[in-house]
Length: 595
Picture 1 (cartoon, rainbow, N blue to C red):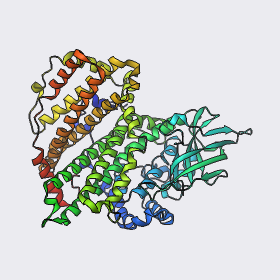
Picture 2: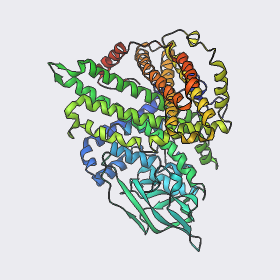
Picture 3: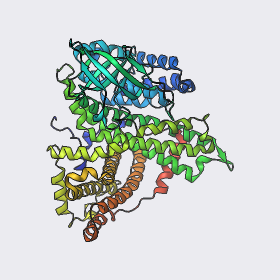
Picture 4: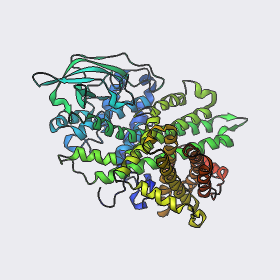
């Protein structure tokens, strides 16, 4: 990595400087212009025909997709050399957020195409493959899809059975097998297909969906995102020209895993867009719905829901764009003309694989929380298809399954951090050992600084120490068998997720305060204090459960005593007052106003 860049996973050891963190308040006018284009397209052309999209009007779906291409919304990540815009990751994610703000089924089509359907070619394609496909993928002339999952190999991507064998004349790979849950399959022109050459060596191929031997299963009838195309794809002696091999034989799994990292952070930002849309519908309904002679938005329990919805969305937004900023910092040093560009780009993204998994898990669960609370605000009407919140609720559920289930990602988060530690890229174990020596004499209150966020800053620092403490004790207790302790690992992951979420909100608020925007900082401050109070309580509980899974008896009592030292200094905030303040502003604005 270039000097001065933030290392992936480094948040477990120390907080980055404010100058190293990107926040949404720093969007440039050009970035906001791209966002407005996407937002206007969704509001004026996609959302009004939502019912037709949900009814699987394929012709309309493709027509809208092509229009998105005409507007440049499909080419953000494609280099200019191949007909794209070659935008930075923040701009790309901002466009993704707006695309995801109006119609989830259409958003899934676009996201699958621009992300896991196109980026493997951008990063791993040969010059010939890039020139052949990228210009047409950029405009929407071609629609792409991605096929990894199989009936017997969902989250176990290494266990795929689809087989590719080189023909005797060396001109083709003969593909046999099947893939399940392939998004865009019903109308895709090409598909990125993963198989094992000779049943052993992972490889990726660009497959023409019109090839002889390619057949489709029927459209799946799904609980949510009903308007998107999801089918099984079958390959029966399909001839794939050798020129369509993507990358190298034996390294296809690396393409799959690295592209999934991209899919995870793109899903996180899609959840930002979905959450904002649900908030907007919920607050407008709350203002218009009268009970007992007053709008229900005046009721304290409705205000609490609205405030909690805004808080989760603000924190997610902070974490998403913080991560995008880190990736952009590395990409700014890469040259698209470099023959090693693809390899270096994947190394850049994999640097933040942990952060990508974090925002995938946090984002999908934040959106589901927001959608659930929105439906509750609508009451009985929220359960009726005539109201958009019913669709929001159904559509949100898939995100905890997409791009690796949240359970798998919770296993990946500590595993990836440990792997980085073992490779010497992140000094986690020395930090845990140092903490073990310091914690006996540590006096948290003596570390409490001054200022409006002093307590929150200390809470984040104590959470960092708790995460290191739990990780150190877990490794010491279980060693190499720690990977089998899934319930313990899940609690470790949740502590780490809360640390990244809390710190992202805190850093954003500090940066806004530093710029002197007192009115905006007032609400950032309230939301950050609210979230840290909620999250720190969850961290305390998670740590108690984790420590109880590691030791017993007197050793457990000693560890719990240390945990109490790290947490009992915290003074609860006036959450009622803070939530009222946030909700009142939302009720007045009738929109998410915080960036």
